[in-house]
Length: 250
Figure 1 (cartoon, rainbow, N blue to C red):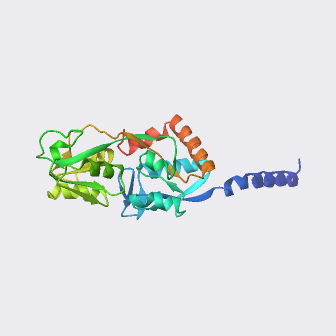
Figure 2 (tube, one colour):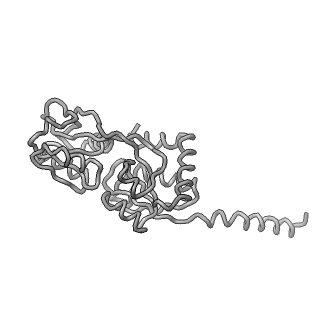
Figure 3 (cartoon, rainbow, N blue to C red):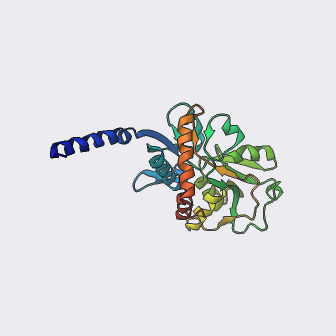
């Protein structure tokens, strides 16, 4: 084979590979800035990072798309997705029947559950009927599955709704609320960082255990299949477990 033919052959191979490289589309991904360690804003880089950011980047690499992660308030994630502002939700979002009516979820990624944060001088545990908190002021995060449940309980002195779990932890620490309900893994991680003195996780058995997953619009079946195929590979090769360990979730 002549040098000319060799160069032509190499060029043809490069051109054949180019469509694969160029076909990696950019998809907008909504993640919250307050869901540490799943998703949170790094104030130094002004970028959202965390376990679910690492995961969607790994999924994108497997599925052939470039994730562009944007900070979105938790309560605005589903509206942002259905309106087309974002293409994917990758955050600490539980699969629920009500949410499944609005969006499609990927295969489950990690088990999840709720917890109560209380002051260190809170004695005993909290039961499933929350009787220990009867007549007290408690807090919950806007947009979570816990809000409706606590509203239905109806035995609190007052139920206050906050924009973020960080606000709830600070309010318990200041003594402004007796307890706050939120995602147990996130509460546990926050408390492990020694940022909140004088508060703790209450002894409480999760009543709303579920799974977190990636969300897409209901008509994005092809994208969902790509994401699920990628997740299957990442589960099999241990990447998901490695990321969970990296962020203190296993």
